Length: 155
Image (cartoon, rainbow, N blue to C red; front, side, top):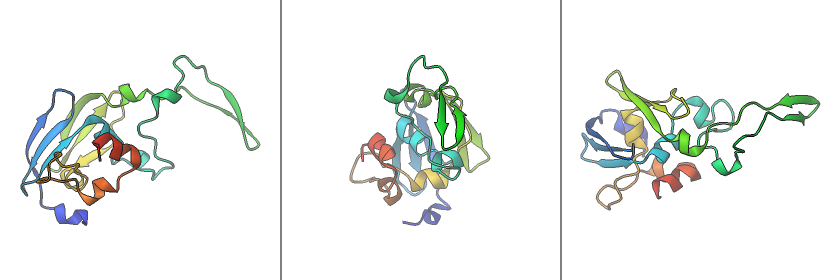
């Protein structure tokens, strides 16, 4: 389904869940429950979607060394100094805040201070994981999402 079909769909009711996810009732009658891991994995910003290189959202926390110091590595003919390790997944999926963006969406500030993604209502409706019932199934875009996003949504 083309996400342009959701141009006129808006959130009629948005409720924050105790765990930081969101429950959304839509003007077209659909119902969505977005968990924090899924929302973060589906961040629409250019960096997370891979427009500026490989997608970087939801780094696997098992690969992070808790107290690792920067390491010098040789890459091709260049010496590269790696920077500080990114925040763990547990931190990265914490919601620190959210604010409206005009009348068309919202911006979420995550636990690692990432906040460049604007979640438009059209985008959220297009990537809806549904509510877990047959009456409100996941959209085609949600089913085609990256593996980590599908796993986070239970798809």
